[in-house]
Image (tube, rainbow, N blue to C red):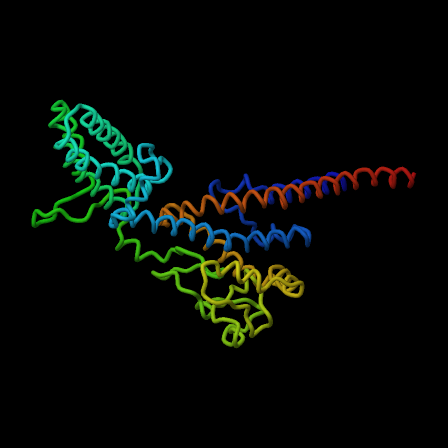
Length: 385
């Protein structure tokens, strides 16, 4: 009976630690009891993995923001548009709707220029090139229209539709048969642009995208800064603990930065703390979580972090934080496509590490423990006879 009980317990713990039994497409976080079933070394790995979520999120989102800044400039700066020449504008960016919009803007804008060249030169080569460019852009616009885009992307798509409509007038001089495609373009224009009571066309809307007004009413985190999830309209650096933040080891009212250590507080649940009244802090930067990790990387703090995560009085605080991370990456709540793209990358990294370094190790440990008990128990029974 003892053998069976130990086996049942081992199997139960193994199931608790298996990410596959949790919801797919989410962070596979452990709850407090699951965390307590880990060894000290496995707990440290788990805490470090949670810390790396904050670091990876900031790095990935920063990279996307930098790329998007260049993308946005393509719609307003002729000089920036010239940079598109180095890219293959005839090849679609299927996994990046922003870049695809930018490429199409550049490509469609070339048609009037090619037409001007055609007017001053004789020959069918430029005519054919104009038709080819238009055909390429037309097919890609139809394909892009079926993808879910943010409100900003919709606006640029509507601009491209308007330009494509004008480009079609040019192409029809050389290919009158393209008149049939006008209906498809007009249909898309109705889908992405609506008329208000005055008869003027208002900003593009898309039924599958949550409105800006409605989104502002939802307190969904939209970024991470120094380990804190930010719900404000701007991703502001935290200079004090947020309202309601509580940890048994922290004196919330007195908790602050040391003089000369920067004024951005690092989340003590994620990065630890110096003492009950003193936080690890950093200055405003592109990667504040990475700076918090460096500032808090010492053996004494690692011990404090482990004790804090082991403390049952912090169970709710840990659960709230992990739930906020899930909310940040919930497609039904999160309206930023950049954040959702970042979430996919960070979730895969966290879940992969959890599986490889914690779940597999704990399963092997439990298996060895069960095998040892089974091999020892019969000899004791035999010796008692």
